View 1 (tube, rainbow, N blue to C red):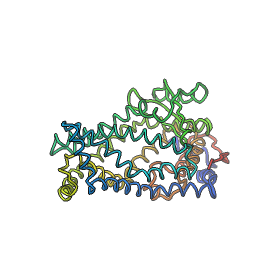
View 2 (view 1 turned 180 degrees about the horizontal axis):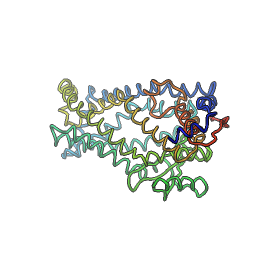
View 3 (view 1 turned 180 degrees about the vertical axis):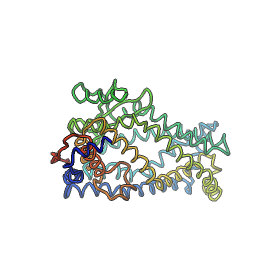
View 4 (view 1 turned 135 degrees about the vertical axis):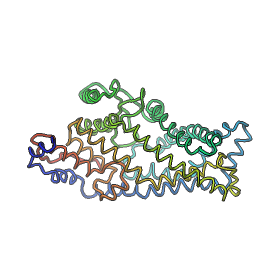
Length: 413
């Protein structure tokens, strides 16, 4: 009822016209560049999956995976330690095989489109840190997963999916405190109007706001970002210095309202629950297909069975194929949550023009106006056009005397 009353109070506010006024800020070469970057990502999704599949396949017919297993068995006798040791060369070699592609997509392409602020040496150093973390994670994950496969011969697919979820929860718990600071410096957001407003918005929605963190993402990229991360005692509000330095207070409030929406709407837990169902289905498929593949090719690959750590590339290959096939599904799940957070943020921050401006700024690396099918398949966030329209509709429905504005917005392209 309230939106209808507000709508009647603003008959002269044309949502389509107001939306178009924002979208037309991005024109000519700037729009072409934005579209080219994002549309190129469609192919990157496919090629990245193919590179991953190729890297895992390279470990099987060459016998490398079996050699990694044999090496671990010569060093230690305990099965769980053998699996942990196997994870080290597996992670190193599969990463090295994909390294040229990673360098292109992660560094040179970002540099080409003006999004990268790091030198190659600095970027590569962070990749090395990520590799070290990946080795430790894979050591723990593969040890747990293969222990489950050995212990529960008929139901390991159920327990395996549960193991993955436990690791995801643990990662969400420790990530903000132990992992994120390895890449960026986190400091308390200085006192002032920006912090005061963020804290007030958080407290009004029962979000812990004792600490609001600022991190130095500008050393890596020009992208604006913020988040409410962590679980339980590690929950924290963070925004990057690009958001603080490149945007106005109304834009910051709009972004932080959106991020708080994820917390209040319990999106982390809901996402994990939805992914748990997907993982259970995928593990059920692997339970059937994995052993069949090994029965057919195992002798040539020197893989003894699904409980053999040397079968890791088989599991990883299936995961890469599944991730590619499920990309539209995963994008939709995330996009729905993001849209819900958008609506929450508009209600909390009450800054429709600030939210519209942020949507336009994200056009630096997101296509602003895709077709509906394109958005449904490839976007894991609502497009800029969708977000601007939502903002202008909210403005018409909730702002008394809403007036058309000519956006005073300069995009850094």
